[in-house]
Image (cartoon, rainbow, N blue to C red; front, side, top):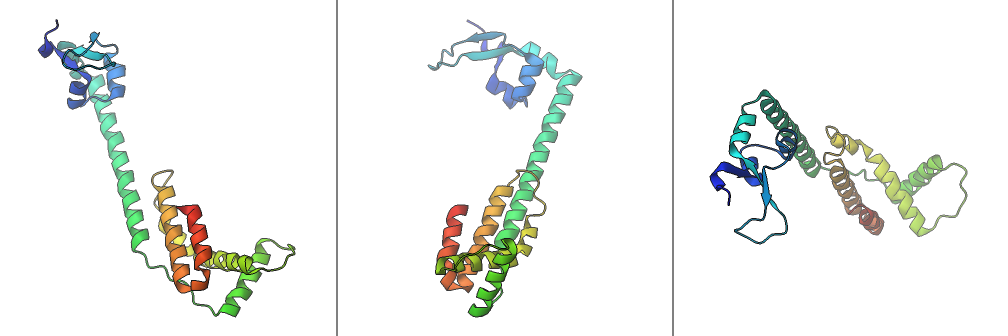
Length: 191
């Protein structure tokens, strides 16, 4: 039986400020590995000699690894703060939908559609017209995409884009009730 006070478990190392990467790089294999007598578990308990742990904690390698971990944690925290700030600004920003008479909206939507796909023939069904009108209004509201500025890479960008799209479609549906079904259909793709 080993003396518990002379060994440190993984949980104990983490409490002392060690990360899994630091344990693997600086300590390597456990000094003792076996079953925990206090509880049944398939996973073996890994124990590290306390004297060896304390000796490594006094080395410059440990100090630089700990500083790198703190720097990584700080950058993650900053990214999370940016994500929350952008989500808050998207949630608080009023979405102003232009109010256009129905005939003018239909004319603009058709013109916009022909600009996107020139030379495409086809009759205009009611469903197609609703899709074109919502598409045109979404295009007219792209200025709100600037609310996503400040989010880099994957740090909440997908979540922010979904929130922005949902808010824009909700605003279009509120301004143009006859387009609400098409907006709901598009939000179904977003949620």
